[in-house]
Image (cartoon, rainbow, N blue to C red):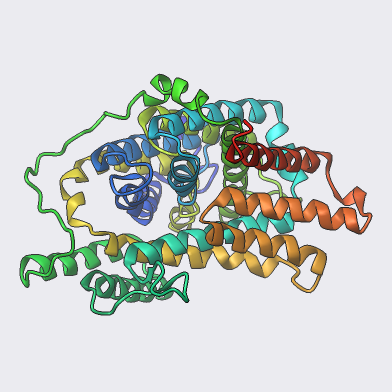
Length: 452
């Protein structure tokens, strides 16, 4: 262990690392139940829930081991919240891709990430994006995730009358009431800083839901297990290879937007999380840089393609890694333990039917709150900054599309700076990105007009 992880050098020991690994897992375990809510049978992606769980656990284990062994950092990876929403609601929903074609896109994006990482271009691209837009991107995804949570909970519903676009759901709905109870439980646990708050909330809310349905006969869509034997579903395994043809049949505009979305969103998400977690562990140097960040990003890139092969959306580094760091984790041994726990998570498949969407929706809402923390770092008093950031943030939930919100903000930024003749503020790569977004909309318009 000492030779592999250099425990003494990092002032830690095996016992501390094991506790830290378990802490990280229980803080992240909610993704096993939450990912089917975003990618499963009742979503635009339409994958079998059992297949999503199998892919989630295996991809998380592999990704977590990769980052722990390549960088010796106590980080953990799993299919990312926000990134799974991009997969389901943007790639499969807005762009109309099949789940297999979307997995092909994620696999290709992973290969691109690997090439960009080993050449150093990935870091260069991130540096080309203004810090304000990076902050707005995270907050916009947070609002989008929160909206999904409100809709899944039945708290926000579609047009209630001709005068409204959306409205509040009915308090006569048992599912909405259960979701509100779950939201209260989640909020209380989070503000009291209870470890594994999300995981505990899902279990507690599901238990209340089971009592409501099986004791009092209130239907909540909960399915009782028919077999307690764990079921591994590899039906999506390798779909990314057999669905390349479906991906190539998609409109050019959709393909361009797909790759831009996957590349940019994952890059910002990964680097932001790595820096934040590393700061918590005290790994940053005097200039605020993270040593061996290239190895950590390479692990993330490989995990993305590996996750696509398994059958899940983009795998990324989790900010919940900081829980294990807070528990004393300082090396890749922490990650090794967390990865083993995710493999054991495969045996949870029989009980997934006992977890209603009302139990996972509150997690999405609270995660949305947390992601909006980046809004404080935006200078709203500067109108040149405020306009593109505002359009980015509100565009994602309003358009129900992370890509369109991102595009709107980027285009607005370039237009504002050009109008002010501040061409030096625009990195050359921003012109390229904006040109691709504009091309996407032009091609989409021509397609709608039956010209293409």
